[in-house]
Length: 638
Image (cartoon, rainbow, N blue to C red; front, side, top):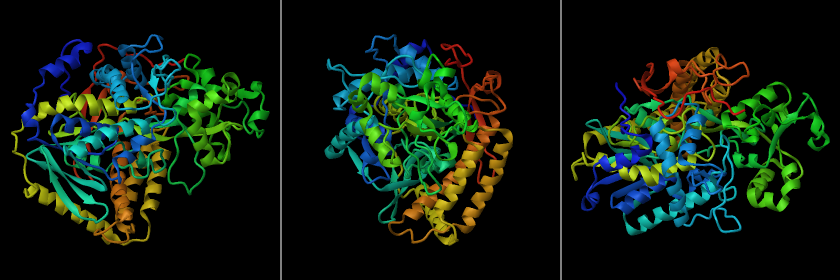
């Protein structure tokens, strides 16, 4: 299989402009004849549904939440990047492009990343027009702050709840289209199958999560904006409902899965407190603007943090990476935290934590300034831990947070399966092996507001208006039958172990062998244990109730069944990629000072995996990565 990324020709700064002109358009009077299904209504899906509805397409949008405004995009805290250069500190579109490619450790597609940087400024203008209350300076200009992996202040923010405010803006635009009748919303519906007709994605099968009713929906094209698969690790900063079922069902129907081993561990999270936990909590990377990360210089130092003098503290990020300090990229900061804890210098229960200390910045700026910037985050930390961060440094530790891998897409955001477009975190396209902070919101809104409204037309012009199949087509009936059989199989096991027990066991395997540090022996162990756990799942899982009504255990069982397959693919990819790059850290491949060591000669490609059937080894297809505008180099933040 040859992967054609459909990257336009010409200079990189002209590619997107040229491509928009070269693409075919849909006549305004014809747009209403095309039906588009959007699955997921977070920033990517919600922005796409609102934009396509406003353009005149007939849109049906589906989400498993009771409202689109409860999408997990709401949990993003720190900010959104754009190359406005309001601070006059040397930022530009090319610098944002370069920082993103470098931050991803040179494992992303240049053309996609440049387009992302190019449209970033328009995103801010769009969000301001929608009423998003970005923080402002005294003059009234939009304020900026710094984020990891950049030496300029380009991050726009709304206190510590930027994702929430951006989502409310997209939700307002979506609600307008719902009221006008151009978008039909289906809340509390979960996609369980993709329908493929004559090799093209033409619809989905969903389950009404309240009544249990299974229904089919046909369209001319399907958009997936369903987020990432971080919950394969069980403990993550993702909401408990976040799952990979939509993209995994598409993968099983032929969509290639790209770079699944690129999973991001966030360095700034509240540490694990015990076995009782079902998820972890992110503390925004923005806190590292004013908070200093440190541990005692000597292991076993049991003194209170304020009792430890400066000479006995190791501000290890400032020491190791003086140019970036506490704002070193996430993968590097996470590994540094793990290293000092492995040395026995960690703080808190079990020694799995480091301090994030604001005492210096409070003394320098005053409590009022810090409260204005991060007040809601301080309050959240105190509510969860019972510790007052105004008096006691926060304790943080790395946790699973985001995935850079996802379904393979071309420059038009269409997968190898024609008619299936994939947006936001659900695709692989922009972040390489490590995402820089404040870039997830940027990508989601870029894809939804400024990319897919153009590129979808190029596909639809090849589809005859009114030619979409009906839900009576045999492919839809077969998909419904498959969903029914799988549901009956899950309910019929009637074993003795709960879904959560299996999910927790999978998470332990993933974190221990496919987590922050990976090696050949550990990955092979994971590839032995995951199939064994999956076999136990189908023999001994207990799913009470029926499929004919509200049943959360059934929902979880389907999602965990998919995670048990995806986790194996993730380990395959990590074993095959015998190099270190970004967040994929193979312990066999590191520099003398412990940094990731790439192998550009053998691994400068996108690994896109093809599903070959249950119990069969997946097949990898490779898209070579060309670097014509950024010089390949060993990444350094020192």
